[in-house]
Figure 1: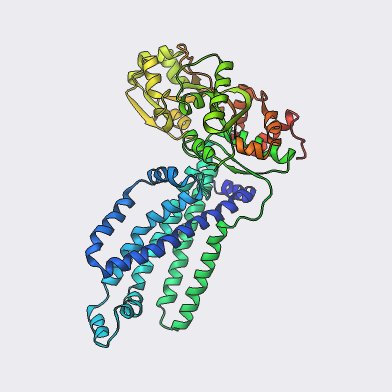
Figure 2: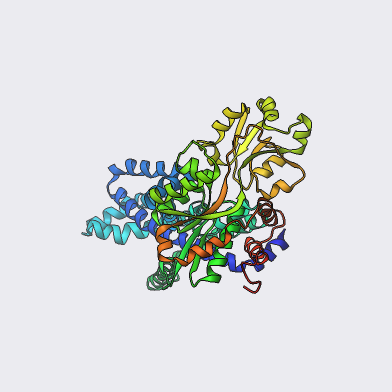
Length: 515
């Protein structure tokens, strides 16, 4: 494994180095914000003790909110991306710095304070010249804990389309790439350890009496300048020409399709493409971001748009449904559907071959007869969809004894290990090629069709009309078998999704091999 990690870091350095820098930038900005607010609030409650129980209680309550929930609360207000991630991280970082500032100031010897008052020092002078310097070691200890925690927690930011090493972790889980997941996790751990180590060195330097106060002030000032400049560079956007932003759901095939669109756009136009892969929550987060203008293009599925976005229940023939879908998207959301790729990635139910053989399972009806003995697993959003778990269970008379929420990248692993007995699958999943996995027949024809296609903002299309002909190159180009094969190449053979996408485009004559 160690050799694999070294090789992975070497081969994918162009992927990892920007993530490390962005991870540090996001963390540092949150740390700076939390430090300024935290020390200010800590001083305030220390000087106004009656407010301390209320403020510390509020901050402690915020600290108990799960990070995923916090990000979910922020999305409707501040949208997805780095902004929401920084706000969430800053909120979580407040408690240790506020508490340590308050504790440090309260711990200053009362006799020293009385002596200062007797010498005629003002309240502000006592705070600035006595309380804060004496409380500094305690404040610095809280700062160190807060820094390490923030760097570690920043990995969750990728769930809402922010950058950092969480991108590698989440993408590794989604594509069943254990090496990428471990590489991302190890990088986060190393950054947190280095931060703890360096702050420890700084702490010892400041407490060393051999260094003059002037030297210490110079070191502190220099460090602050470096941190602020490095963090501010996250907001620096160099002058760019034409640019579009593509988003994808946390699915292997969407990673691949996103790369196809990027390759075609940059090959056939002078438009640059920014990619945000694996946005947590899928359609529930990407669609509002598209309407808002945070994203320009993303791959979507007709069934999801019809049922989940438009809340339609009546299913007509495919041609009529697609026409109505296109019309309603343009009228309600100013979004345009640009063709369909050709494959139908609908839902299905998968079990292990061992279970299918034991109970002679071939259809959903067969599964219903023994469902009360089985555990069912699926990704989180399937349980909340109108056409999801409850509707499926009612339509097929399923009565599973237990349901489990699983990340999309972990469900096949959980199935093979026996942690669940049946899972929701996508019919183009690469892991369905495994001979030990059986996809049951939907004999009740419950699941509708989910044809994949491109959704683009009308405003983007008006700005860059050349995108229409480029994106339409993918129309009817990918079959279910071809999509499943590409998913298998990424998930099982561990090929890079960019290379897989490029090879397919070359094969179809849509891209020159040298590109």
